[in-house]
Image 1 (cartoon, chains in turn orange, red):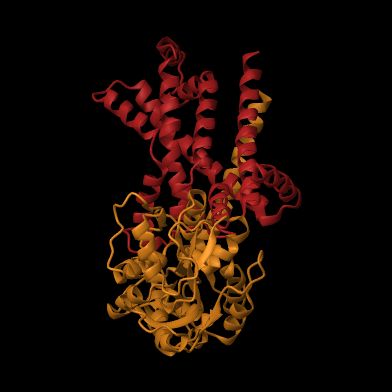
Image 2 (cartoon, helix red, strand yellow):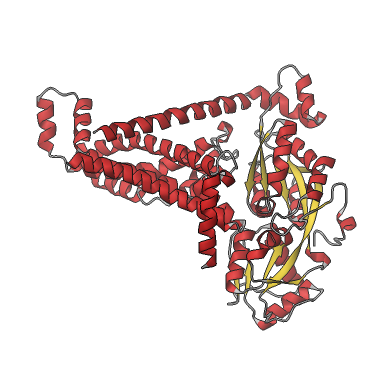
Length: 324
Length: 231
């Protein structure tokens, strides 16, 4: 009997505790969702720029305090955002919510106005989004590169090849096991574009499989299956030690992996936090963030993962046909 | 095999030091799933009692619906809740997506049919004469319900256990409506997934051990209560 009462008391305590938490959250969200904030704050700051601009108007100090960042799994899985985001939150006072999905889904979130700012790596799809005016102010942030990994034995014999397209042709011809993301992510889009350049269609072949998962998870599958895979270098280095796969092809200019930041257009969607999105985008190309990206190394391997690129163009990085 | 032993050894170290914010994540899991279960108990007992005590047309259909609900795929619930709560959705202006509150909503939807099903099944087995007798003694509806519930508290504890187990171990809905935000909506299951994707198996194992221990402790407490009641 006593036990039951104790349990009930415990549950009630839990409810009370969560009630407090939830109420706090509620007030905050109500406050942030006030019509004034949305109506006056957003366009104002969108034109004038910085969050300070909002302070000069009497009504709104706040504006929404939270920003939703839709980004790729690689920026989260590599640990880069764990380093950058606390700095940004400290400097700006914003609360950044990172939703790590594939670039395809991240761009779709931007398309629907479900995020405020995007950090993605799918140049041709990014361009479409900007052209449709759902996203604005696209800027390059950093790059690393994609690499082709495969089993040690290398049954397709692609080791050391300089052309990734030729390498994929050999994988195709030998029917060697290959794992694709198949999730419309930036990596997936790149892989598809390489097959297209090779004028081959691996879809439906018995040796070609799609995981439908993030980079880290897909890399695990390829590793277990002794399969070929296209992977971004950051994810590869982060998992490197535990992998039996070998790096076979690298350095082809088409394998460059360029990340851009862009704001979701606050004029297109009422609920988008325009000033917040701009603040994060500006932060990513700021000297401070760029230096942090430059200094960021993989914890396990100690190798640098990204090269900062703010202010550069695709051509300067060495990418000839970013939208091809 | 190395992975298992090294992972286990390292996970013990992590549990001891509390690295990777594991205790914070554990507490949050408890709070979110605990709240979801409490809310689903309130709804589930009310609905379950209504189904069990009242004769009405289509009662069997309702029973089947509840039983179907007991197997609701969490990822479907997650998608549904997300569609409503995304900014582009009908409730987007509430700004609830990617908050603990959204996770409580989703887990409540998952746990409520489970609690309802268990409650209805338990109450159906109560001798109907007990209710008649209670009314004859002048009990109000609410008093009657309270006494009957007290009589069936053992199966109801099973409802709590099943509901809690369902809520705390689901991942699809938590990931989709919570977003797995560090320090905000990251719970045990989504944290395990993240660490695996990062190739950090030791913390993934540590978190799994905690999750299992948590479910075990809750079951143990409830089972102990059940046993005490019997004697």
